[in-house]
Figure 1 (cartoon, helix red, strand yellow):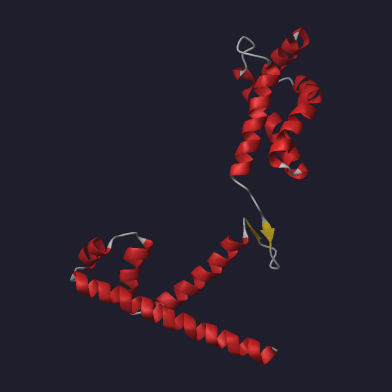
Figure 2 (figure 1 turned 45 degrees about the horizontal axis):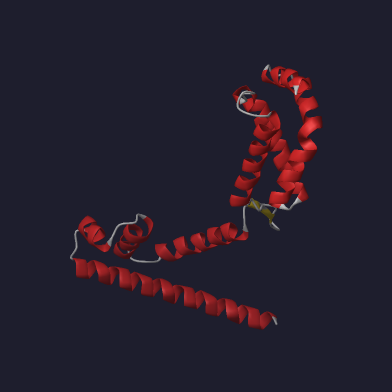
Length: 184
């Protein structure tokens, strides 16, 4: 314990040799804790590195009167591993060499571009109605006041706009189906 106290005091003075000695002493046990939580060796190695970075940055917060150093370091490792499990980062590299967090992100970007193209084909008052409700988050009552039209008229704008968007997507899907059929 006395050896640890000297190492910890050196660590608190940002001595990299002390960090190396503490790493050698505790990394195996902390790695085991992290690996049991995340069940992925590569991720566990990254999280172990993150743990020791945090130990280095927060070493001044350790108080030997409150408990053992290993317990303090264990809690840091455990919290980092649990937080990593709550926010999984899955990066995907596509054929165009772009990296995305997940496939849905890339697909939703394509859908958004297609949706924007379809929206631009609508009449301006239909575009405005959809924008107010679906993109700005207004209720129908708030949006009809914003556009200064009766509520019934506003609701018909929304209904007509959605119908036109549905028709536009159906045409595109039909054309895609015809192209695929010709390829086969």
